[in-house]
Image 1: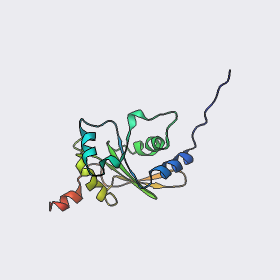
Image 2: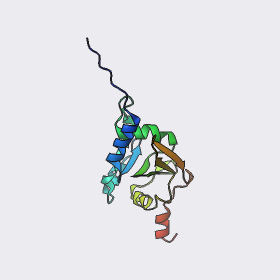
Image 3: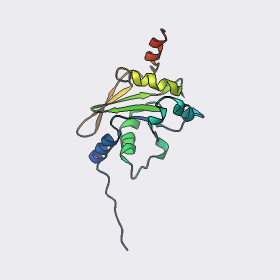
Image 4: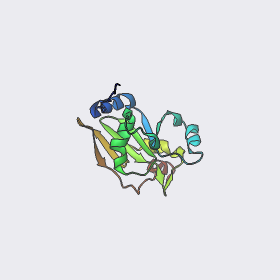
Length: 153
């Protein structure tokens, strides 16, 4: 009888694979969507271009590079879900997509992306060992200022 032991994935290799695959992309990390939310997202310009990952389905024993990133660096931030992540090394910007304990309307995502460099809840800086988290604006602040400025409010 033969037993094959899988080696634990190398965290640095997983990080490198994640960055190679997702640099220049945005992720939406969630725990399921409210009814019709995904359908509405797909109606938005560019809405289908976001990589979506449901944290309820992360493979704990053999995570893919993106699953390892979410499990090891994103979830420990403790931000409300869903989350918007812009992968643009050397910094990854993170912003939650909730207001009043509910997901914002998908039409607001583009406004959030437009201001993500200046208005984010956390920055994950790429380091040799992984990612270093730096807090940003308060979790309670999640108005789309770019939209309010555009509307003259």
